[in-house]
Length: 430
Image (tube, rainbow, N blue to C red; front, side, top):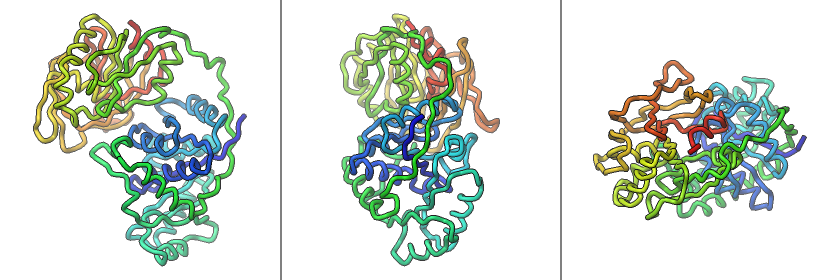
């Protein structure tokens, strides 16, 4: 077993400031010379980019549905081997979702910090904090932090609203210089924010004046009781080219780690900027923002032709969401600008001004069930016959089509490869 201070940062709802506070905590303790490992609960790509920038270490998902409890336990145990602090950012509100952030905290015994946006709030702050702390008594509730506080007198009012046994962790006052900008899918990608480090350091300075300047209590992490954690080398020496630039950046670190653990050799390339496709047996086209780079993607004729040649050679391609849109005949952004794409998949997609589909999904492959999530704003029109439909976790959600064309597998789903390594290996095997 391993021991490490750990904290789960949650809130009563989305939009309360979980990401900024978690990032500020990571930067605060990193600046004090500590090694900080950060995790994100739930299927998210943008928040982890900010958290990675803040901590200086890769950010992995802790998702009990996509990865399973044993997988999450293994990730935490590995982090505890080297971490001076483990931070976990929750998803939505503390008790939202099945499983929820509260489930993660309860299963692994991790203390919970509640971040509450106190804008337009006074004594009700204490009631919200009390509800979060007592709704599930088995949780280790460490205290509450007030965010977006207007003044010192406002902070006093909030603190006075707490019941005597509720720990007050401090107040973060409004500061527009600390805000992290966003767009339709969430926060702006970290590498697009020129002054991201200045913002993070300023946030860390604010937190240094609160009780969070000291480490949370230690948590004991144990290795999962599994017969063997060694993966079969089913991708030994298979060269996989992974698209990685500002148009294709939505990829789980766990996916890449798994491919490498199964023996694959990974090489990155940029569909935006490169004029040649790397020598590769398989391609991985993750999601991202191709709609923001239509002209540049369309103008890179050499790359589009190289990907068509790769497919014509019957070599595997795995395309997720934005990666799938790139393989269509055309893609149209929300302003009506249309551009030619790779044209392997016969169809088009048009960006909408509203969310089209989201949620956790699974799909059946010959090797078993594969899990992931969908979150997109585009409407797809395609003439290719659907290979199968995904199964959403909730009946109210809409299934997503899966497409297979020769050795290409494409869908809106962002797959979580550790959910079934055998499926992942089969998709990339030449």
